[in-house]
Length: 183
Image 1 (cartoon, rainbow, N blue to C red):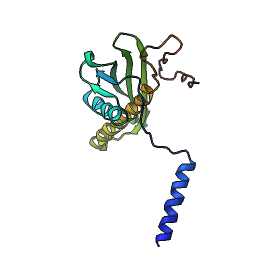
Image 2 (image 1 turned 90 degrees about the vertical axis):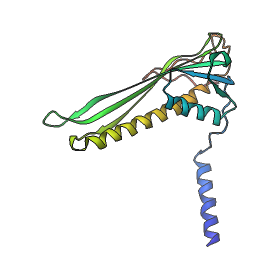
Image 3 (image 1 turned 180 degrees about the horizontal axis):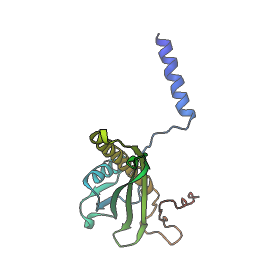
Image 4 (image 1 turned 45 degrees about the vertical axis):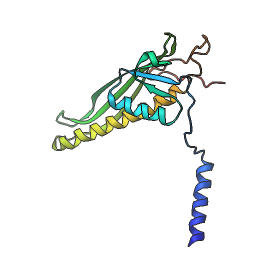
């Protein structure tokens, strides 16, 4: 029995290693003190936890104490995707966008205004309106967490607080082509 457990554990580890799985590890941000402005408390808390837990960077309260300023704004919305034969909405598209920009305290732009835009589809029934409202809240929370995860990866692309014109991190807009990978 012990042999089988050991063999299963060994095979599982080898399969994870073969597929390219790797733990996130430590991030090395160019800034060591960051201030977050304009974000809702939930986003600020998750972003602070992700940055401080995965790097030696500290999130501070005052721009005077910071190396960089991260400005955030979020928006939510919904559109009708499908209607039934009576013209009642049967499916909604939930939209979430997180706008951000990163500047150094001297005013130089490290990441220009960019947007992370996400959406999810949700079926709808008037009969279950209360449950569907809770489902929408969960989907918005999932999109919010996904956007914060993407933002932490985006912040890692900044390599210096004083970029020369060729080294600046380009902005990203929805449906825009991604920037080329660094050489």
